[in-house]
Length: 93
View 1 (cartoon, rainbow, N blue to C red):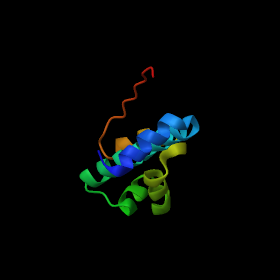
View 2 (tube, rainbow, N blue to C red):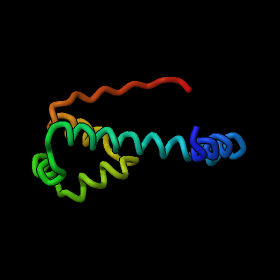
View 3 (cartoon, helix red, strand yellow):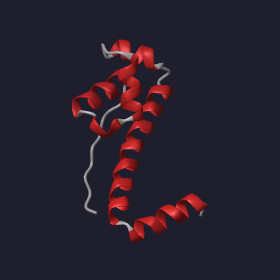
View 4 (tube, rainbow, N blue to C red):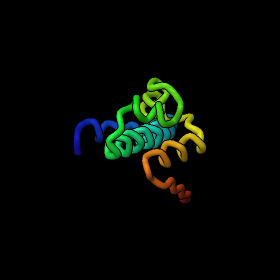
């Protein structure tokens, strides 16, 4: 385990607010990374995807880097343009 992972795990045990904020931020980060990956796998640049979605490149960048406030309808359009299907699941903690 890396020093960073050790620090994060230790801090999460003693600081519940850090733990809650870290986990939420990490989930948002993962969404952005997944969106970027499917865009790249589909062979699209941010500019090309923005054109297909009738938006600006900066909007695509914001989605991929700050996915915390993304609308479900935006996710569906993003996935659809790239020939992906959006699946959502919920699970208990």
